Length: 369
Ligand SMILES: *Cc1c(COP(=O)(O)O)cnc(C)c1O
Image: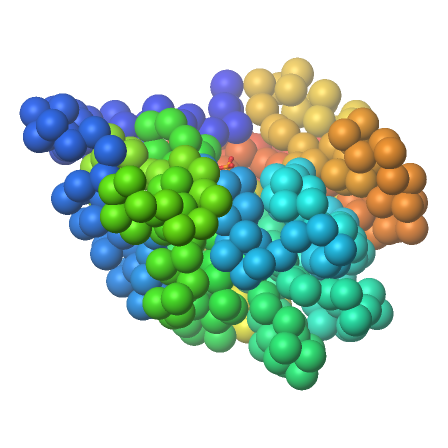
């Protein structure tokens, strides 16, 4: 049997007629930048996220950069980020010239929490960016409390958390700004790059919109130094079609996750363990094992594709070699990078495949690979 890690084309095949129709509608409309499809998706996405405003951006990294810029963060400011995340969270901070302050995650949840953050606060801390890693919400109330005491804004990196809930309410407006990616492999993915921010602040929404549109509200009037980062109508039209299926797809991911959790409960693996406050959406289903590399190759021999998120923390990437303080002192992030393994997961993974994955994994771990 061959089990792919994720079949990204399956969502298109499921909704082919509707997506093809949406693409043709945009091409025939003559609106290739902005216009009704983008407005409609932004309204749909804000409503879905239980937020007052959504503003499309070119991609998820830009959403983070524009969020930081909208808050006026730049050189001399410190921004707290997880030591274990996709590098984009860090690159956004670097892009605005601010200083990265990594925090080691809580080993049980993979996410940073209020305790870890408190220990790294300084008078220069100007923002905190928790990441809902793998689709499991971070403990926002604790983080927001710490931040509010000191008047520090919080930006959620929700690039992996479409539809996830924290204490029953959808991710989308707990913090000051929430950043989204619609990269094709995300739980809600476009047919190319795309991103957005959601917020309950009209001021922040307008600021992000201006920044992403040449610093302009009206054509040829440029009030601030902006850039070009907009969600385009083709992507917006595709996303609108797919959004109608997101809850069904999330339910399928959760069903597979429940199956894995049950079938692997006595395997020699550390399984994901969602805190009570979180309804995760399993962008990734990440297990941990002492002999991860060996386990991964044994699974590959059996036709099972797995990935590693992420093989090294951002602070140990060459891109950050100029600042050795970012590389050392984060033992949990370091340890996770050696042990994590992401199992096949997605709305179109068959139960037959999931059963095969679980069966092979149980056998391999119980016999020391
Ligand atoms: C995917 C991702 C991003 C970046 O999104 P892009 O749309 O690829 O720029 C940022 N943060 C996290 C945690 C991500 O997983």
